[in-house]
Image (cartoon, rainbow, N blue to C red; front, side, top):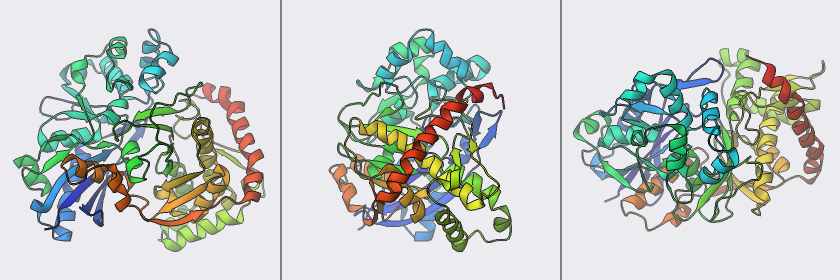
Length: 505
């Protein structure tokens, strides 16, 4: 009898439930979207009940559509958005909306921690900078601005941890998501007593840390009725999406590198030790693979910037119902018709401030070099190039310590062959395209779940899941042409850095 693995990937725009057979075949998937509230310039929140409704809907829909016996699902496992702060009570009920990864409000809380520890010392403990992006700073903000909620908080959770708690009644997080709280001892894989003391946070409000393959419990009767799962189904905690995607992209051994172009985007490799950049531009995550780390650089808006320009420049076509395969084909044609450098336009993709490589919450988006002869295709290409050039800075930092000549590319942005070739040319590296672009997080979660319940021996099983569809090699002419453009891109940011800090909105 075939056994199945149900993986949930709780992203920024929605939850994707994906069912895999135990031999690694994708059986089917279902998506349920939810909203993000962006306000006050730097704030971003989601309703955790929307996460739960999405998990319930997609689980039932997938099981029903595929006519799967819930008893044949061997395990449920998770990938989820990281660096959030959801305050829940003892029953796991949310006390306020979740402050998600994109939120940058906790600037004063960053300064409070800096009174006790330097950025460099903090970086050496956590593998990350002390910034407003991380969970501990957001929890400090709740303490400082909503003390009544802080006092009622039993645990603070990330997205997948909340769903695990709803399914099992147990409160855990894994090392990768624990790392995203910004108070994690990266080398010793435990909460950092030192940073928690400096932050002035009650350590009891943090969940217990466990390996990603840990079985957090079993689906309760109430959760079974809500989701359509069988009562007693094992629930494996899984990992943060940036690191489960490492498994799904095959980055499970030193030097294996991938690039993900989603709403945000990142480049991640694998190493046996943390990689520390002298300028602290990259970070290192705790990998879900035991004994490994995942050095990484993540930017705030990548596919998000692409969707922004698409929705504004192509509003008429979208309203007229041309939002189809031909619509994207026409957009790609316009990108191709614009030359390297977008006819002189540089786009800075900092629509929500920036993490790597700038670490500048006050950075803004900008089109620079506009001329009367520029067309829509130039603007669109400049957005694609701006995102990719920002990522190329991250890649060059990692290359100082890791030999990287090829990358697997995943995510929604990887659907575009034009964008993939631009990546190959800007990165000056082979860009490898797997058969599945948007299920890397789900595949990683499935592998983690399978290992957790003993279906798989180790992470090498991911090779049963991945097939390579195509490879883009760098065009030497374009590689050479991009060199001065990349320099100008960097110059534009530094020329405007002080101006951005003066702009209040």
